[in-house]
Amino acid sequence: MSNKLLLESIRATKSVKQYDIISDGLLMAASNQKLRVLLIGEGGREHALAWKLRQSPRVEHVFVVPGNAGTARDLMNVSNIDHVAIDQYEVLVKTAQDLRIGLVVVGPDSAVVGGISEYFRQAKIPCFAPSKAAAEIEGSKAFAKDFMRRHGIPTAEYKSFTDFRAARSYVESVKHKVVIKADGLAAGKGVIIPSNKAQAIQALTDIMINQHFGTAGSAVVIEAFLEGQEFSMSTFSDGTTMVALPLGQDHKRIYDGDKGPNTGGMGVYAPVPAATREVMDRIGYEIIGPTLVGFRQEGREFVGLLTTGIMLTPTGPKVLEYNARFGDPEAQSIMPLLDREVDLAEVMLACIERTLREVEMKLSPGYACNVVVAAEGYPGAYRTGDVVQFSPAPQDCLIFHAGTKLVEDEVVTSGGRVFTVVGLGKTLPEAVDNAYQGVRSISFPGMYYRKDIAHRALTSTG
Image (cartoon, rainbow, N blue to C red; front, side, top):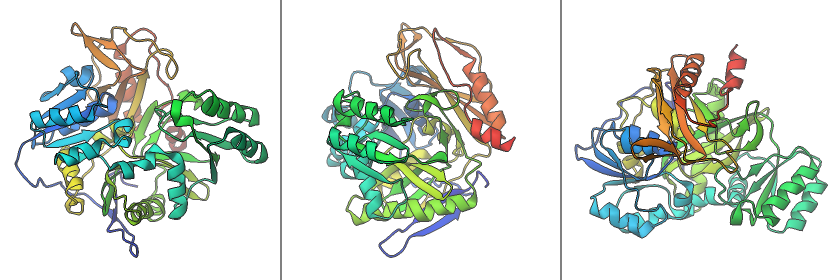
């Protein structure tokens, strides 16, 4: 399928779920008014969003709270505000008012699920993030699974538990392989795929008794393991219209060959060759349309960016989970695939103003592949404070900072996932090669990255 095609699920109501493919078109700016943008977050996702937002002819300046070394020094008309914490919602509103902010963009899941959007809406400041009620689709996996059941959205067989003994008894009784998920937010690490019953019971013990993920593990979802390829679909929504971006494939496990514990994501390529027209049609009709209908029927109108994790099984696509914001590192590959003339600020405002139906978007040709460079020890306890050395990177390469900060004008590691390096190319192998060349332009003690990003697609295409 051409990577210039976008999905659109439009005007979903109780009786109509229309789904079309839309082709190339330019996004037309609705106004010449200059915008100041407040972008909340500090990861590679936020660096990528800042990079795209600053291309908007309407955007005067992007302020990132708290940002990282990349948003501090790598982009014109972008600066950090690092003295305000992202959970200080009232202070953030006052900061936005003082700076005359015209658009707030929220990155982190904790802020989205925590209801940050309500504070800005009460202050009449446009905020690109769903309501707290809509964001429950990410905040509780049990709620999300029940939501899918209510609206006939295909997903794995499951049961939810708040009692450890009941959960253990269920695991002991089932004959199929299971996946165990902490109900709440766990930085992408709260999903465990045990190989046997003993490991499953240990996972339950770690989550529910030992509280490895804190209060996120006060409840668990135990679902049947699904075989197939996993994709992510990022979908803009204004509550009545959804416009979906190219599918990406993340690599969640820390080690090559998809082994080891889950992480927040170690690399994403997009678009996905396995996403044929038939597959995309089924996703639209069976998943995206019914999801939008479900939100509206339950009075949880979703305005923002919905990321849907999908497993393409032998019997068709099934939903793994929903995220109520841009994925990380999905956004780092998707933003470069949007054509230069696509105005991200206008798209976000169209969602907020319920005019997304009037927006047309265009994709750049080719592929994007990103590789996450992590600190030694990630996803467990990781080292920080190492000085990063850089050498020239390829032309078709972007380096988005994540866990970095500036110390006396030197870039120093400060997080588990330190960089996302994006390679662009006319073909997927070319994009992958450019990404790894970019990785080799970075050096710091103990740096780690997977060597096999996009291995499934590269193997299948020969």
